[in-house]
Image (cartoon, rainbow, N blue to C red; front, side, top):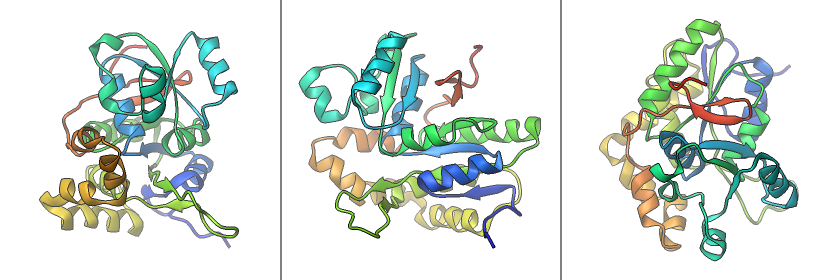
Length: 255
């Protein structure tokens, strides 16, 4: 027998496996990858850029896809320093990117997006747009009469041994998911309720907890303190990326 959260309207599932389960159920999906896929996509869409997600890694196939679209690649932070251009740092996007096309690969957020691409609606959420993405998901839920799954993407262990799970849950994604879940309407699974509880118990310490988390420390030690500071801000953006015709656009903009 397969056990899941199907009795509930609002669910929480982790990573690529969770994205697949949500897609099989036909749920609205909200992808949450705070550091940094979601925060980068929200920021880029806020500046009216078009983001085409593509599964990792950045290889010749991904580059050929970008060339076919006439789009620019979004590089990893270190690679962007070497070759120039935009990176997974949300701060690399600005108003100068209006109407420009980009292909974005990432190990977690883009991979989960690719798996769940055929759901009724796929949104991107993070701390930056928590209220806005929840409002949009609530509206779509009523219009489409379907349920919602929030997917914190987590990270991948770099030293996985045979038989071990490569998913490393990240508290930054759990807290981002919890803030969004707290604003969603409908019956919530125990998994979703516990995630909301984590946000409530964290209170005003969310920024400090993410700052000192494994993911936060990794970025800070690589010199990206500004990214962590930026991504920890709640409800500063009204942009809601929605996947339409293989690209993310703002849900509030005409297509």
